[in-house]
Amino acid sequence: MSKAARVNAAQCSRGRKQEQRRFRTAQRASGLRRPSHTTRPNRISPYQSVEQEQEARSEAVVEYAQLIRAQLPTLLAKLSQIPAIR
Image (tube, rainbow, N blue to C red; front, side, top):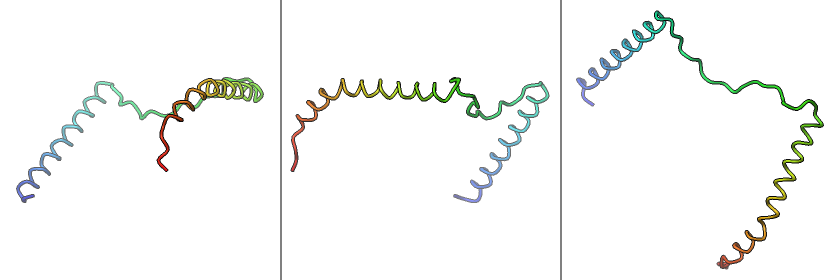
């Protein structure tokens, strides 16, 4: 990169930063606020007790196991059609 190109790039960067600064100043003057970064919500558990949460988790695991059990024969049949490359 030539010296003239570096100087031109630096001037463009300075100009862009000045424009951004003016824009932010104008926004603040008009009463607009820049939104803060998003964060994960800090919530309490929807369950009333530890037992309720454990029950809900157990139920989810049982449902998942039933789903896998229902699909396992089909999956095994399809996998058995793959030739062994030994």
